[in-house]
Image (cartoon, rainbow, N blue to C red; front, side, top):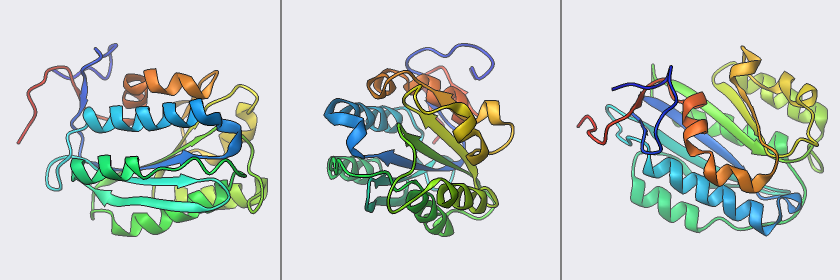
Length: 207
């Protein structure tokens, strides 16, 4: 039973055929607790995704601070993706938003032909060296040509008016605002509700 138009239970699974790229903020303002919450949220998404090269999802993982790290290219191998999450490091430096968005654009070149793609940026701060507001804006504009760009804002100090120009239309469907980075660990179903076009209530998945 699909549940996108209704509140989904905690065990809802994304069964859509989608290529999803997650960009995870490892800048200093996240703090250790916020960074760990992001890692927990990624694992929660992996646990509730139907990963399959032919019929389901592929997920790619990027972590960014001053440097940008490709943790995993687009993959449907859950064991490899979980292992990649384990390699995430809290860089605790600046926020290279533009670099993360450009890296997602390169990763997207390995996406499946004819399959919808979502590029989701998690962030709690404004772009900073070596990125900037204009750099992030331009990189997001370029990425929107080939991917649905979403932003999960992890602090209210990041005004929506600052982020809205980055995301795809309609803006209200592509911007999720939380009050603190640690909240994201408990928002897996909210993330799927906004991101996944086909959620299933039951544990029975297509093969």
